[in-house]
View 1 (tube, one colour):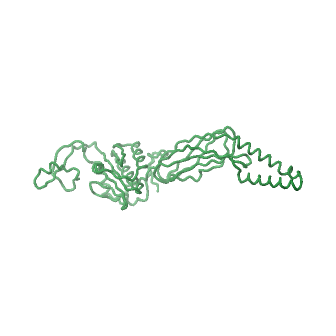
View 2 (cartoon, helix red, strand yellow):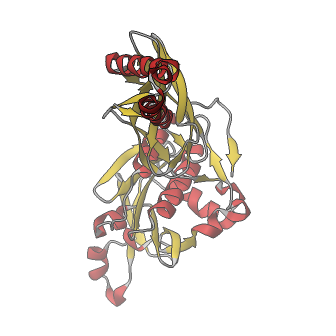
View 3 (cartoon, rainbow, N blue to C red):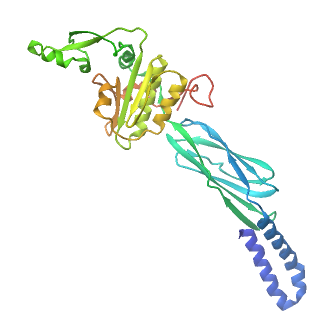
Length: 348
């Protein structure tokens, strides 16, 4: 418990009144000091008797950069008390209204708007409640260790404005045959991916002629695995590129898998899977893949100091070119956003 600025002012007036009473008699004490002493005593008593409020946080829904969320904390008290409620907000979030002066009585809801500004998992809290007496002379601060987190997805760029040739190459990834069922060998043709070369058979053929593996056609197959890696400091660029490519393929009804260093998601489709991919990319770190993951990926996304590229069968597509003229706009998939409806939109 401590004196407020107003409390110090009253205390100074009381001290001055007592000093004056020594020179001019006790009437100065009765006229000014006594009422203020009563006020000070009442303030001390009220503040000391104030019980610690009880708090209960509600979870905050995950979302995209630029979206807003409402933070709600339920505060319970056994009596009416004036208070200042302040919630701490971590980096990557902004909340001008995270401090409020209010009167707590029974169960009171403390709410404020939160803007999601950066990709990642961000902390909200801890909360502090400062109660004061009715005259605002004394205050007592209660601090709470409880925090919660909010997950912010990476930016998802609309690739539909990109170069048609690049988009066709990306879409063709999903039209490949089922690679699990081997059919036969044939001679190598220009443009065949080197990973399909059957090196053991090629070594037995004269003149170093290459042969490639053909797989059984499966019209129902449509899957692609994305592998993503970057150097430290390029996580946001990598996450945005991987999220955009995955979203584009999922909208083509492709079953999409994702591999990042030390983690991944198997191929699947649907809204829940999309959200799972975005959650993984929201916390992806700058690490390199092993050679096996690079080789097995249908789409390899790499980000370094020179930029971000999407690699398909050895062909590199700069991501800035892939996202085209709409590169400064990011798509917000409202079907993925917990607070959104069923429509899709584009947000800067």
